[in-house]
Amino acid sequence: MLLADRNARDRIDYFHALWLGYHQLPHPADLTGAMRAESAALVERVTANAASDYFDLFRSEQTKVNDLLAAHYGLPRPGSTTGAWITYGSNPRRGILSHGSVLSAGAKFDDTSPTLRGVFVRTRLLCETIPPPPPTVNVDKPPEGDAGTCKINRYAAHANVGSCYSCHQLTDPIGFGLEAYDRTGAFRTHDKGAPECAISGEGELKGTGTFNGPAGLANMLMSSGRLEACVVTQLYRYAMGRRERAEDQPTLDLLSELFRQKSRSFEELVLDTVSTAAFAYRTEE
Image 1 (tube, rainbow, N blue to C red):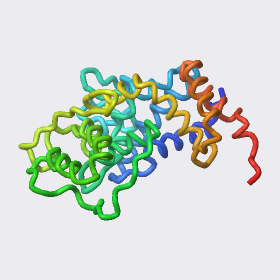
Image 2 (cartoon, rainbow, N blue to C red):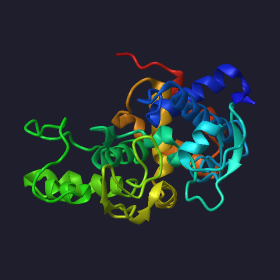
Image 3 (spheres, rainbow, N blue to C red):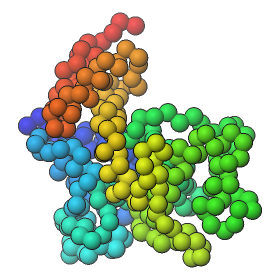
Image 4 (cartoon, rainbow, N blue to C red):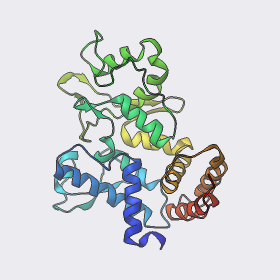
């Protein structure tokens, strides 16, 4: 198998860590190590099997955790310090978007940022472009004002100020769909330090539909028909060492179609990517 080599496995792991934002985590070493190991195990399980559907990465009903991470998630401890595969059962977590490693994306102000989590989904999983905030906005301070104690109200008030709405209406509803999981991926039922502010976990991907939690978001992304093309684009960027250009679009369209035709085999996607003329030949500057 192409991806059976250890060096290849390490590169595939690093690609996913970069793409999904967990190559660096702001947590204690033991928790960081457990999270990285969990995600690496799922990535390897899905990508090392040529017959696997790559979407299993997003809908897996099993995960590999040690006792520390299982307790952190509120799952039954497997009785292992190195990690063992367990089934989620009635727990709503599913797939890699439920991992603490990925849910750490958008951590800010010692809490979560629904805006940054929404930007993460739009840019990393849908390959959209979200404009940066105006230079007059202080991005190092959370939304404040007279909208009340609850986070969702403060963000809603901020999003309706001036020109902010056009971007925030695309990002914040996604982030609030993940709000029941804190900046470390632990489940919670209310805002940090505000038990009176219950978290519903309801979110919306504008133009697509509503969801609840990371598993619901994953299902929506998979059914949208847009996730495959973004996976292809992200791998192409990694392989080429640059962002795509206009002349790359026919190649990306072909790779996306082949990815779908070949049952979303990640190994086949890698083979097809390195077989393109764009990868094999350097263009004269």
